[in-house]
Length: 412
Image 1 (spheres, one colour):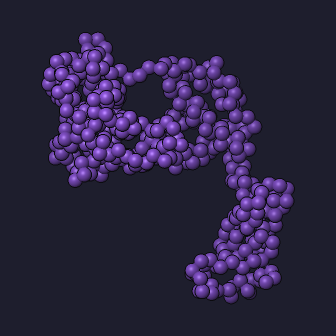
Image 2 (image 1 turned 135 degrees about the horizontal axis):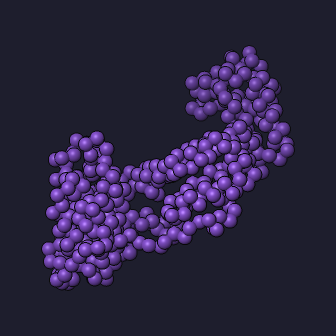
Image 3 (image 1 turned 120 degrees about the vertical axis):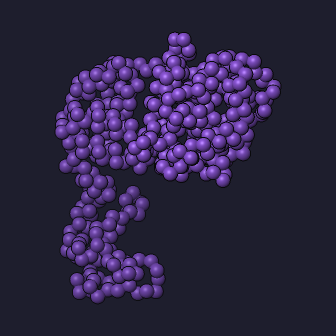
């Protein structure tokens, strides 16, 4: 078949003999595609480095025959220069986007598909609250190294935040460099001289083996807390779950599978974008059932008066200001410390109960460090984790009731 004509294109109908798209060739690398519905569109098909590739040119008649041929000729010229037309097309989408905020928003849009909601919100906060007020309307290619260095110096008193902001800037500049929007990625330069060293300090916690007396006091203080009821219930649940504070406060009733005795956290709310199931001990289950009478009609389990969830900071304030765990009369403690308490306790109990390390790590939602092993090991250890959390709940309750006179052998 030779070159197509407008009259031929208008008269072409799908044969109906197959359910897939039918193609009609025009000039070199240009095809008319006809769907079973008789909708028509243009496709540029080509080979680059021995691999078949294609670019959609748009639907017919919105893109006319002459327009499709013009685009095809342009792509053929690009290909003749040894450049992949698809890469050229991607770069052209960014060529007029050099204003810092436009580049930053495109980077953030790409990362939103990869990150959990919490990670996205945190990075967006650093971008909109700290970075954009300084660089918003600047041409990203005209920002100098010294400007980036001086900007990062502002956060020398908060090393963790300084590093997070540097990570956001690094992502933005990587995208800009990849699409030819800037000549130099300043974040690849030696910024070590302005970066403050992050303290390798773990969250304050109370040792469940060596300091049972103070842990018992904390557990009883939480039970006797006279502040906000919803905050109190979140604090009571925390020792039994070993969740991160942000995950605790953002739990939804849709996550609670009452019949199965499980919490099932959706992938979009997990750091690694993978659904996470956590079995519930009887103690944790009962706390949730108590809460159901108060917030069961709300979206969030720990809902506030505005219908949103309480904040992680409300838990920290309750423990430190409300209960006095600030490192003076009582040891310093944070809600995140329960993860350290649980990890320490479970590994001390592991030998007695012969739990698999992978099961303990899954209780703590620790990702498999060996990525190759993680690909092949998709077992969820759900039954073993249920036993682990039940034993741990009993262990916690014994500490609460008996302080420093626990007999390890009697914990079951």
